[in-house]
Length: 123
Image (cartoon, rainbow, N blue to C red):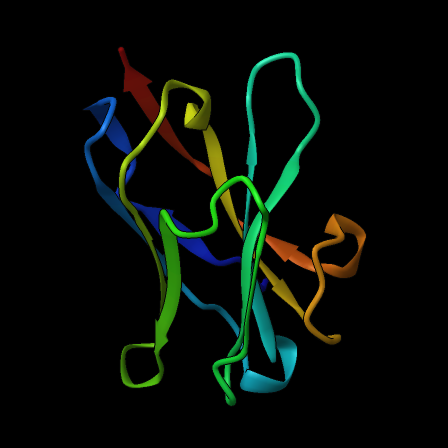
């Protein structure tokens, strides 16, 4: 079963930083694109950022541009999301996802999902 695994969530004060990690799952052809999504209580899942595994192209949601950085370490089979200057509205469960398609912000383009890791930002 292909399922990426996230870690690194936690509680942080507004203005602080966290780094999420996602260990990729399955062969490379099952994950040319990897991304982060988040979902707050009562809200729909929303795109955060995505990266191409081989070429390192990136895509960001406007709400996180300049604050979040997505990266990957091919040797460690791991994707990261460095989150700086966190805001209360960043509070959500963050999900790692893998796509067999091209770089996209659409959740429907992603085939495999992790279980999520909770990020809570206090004021």
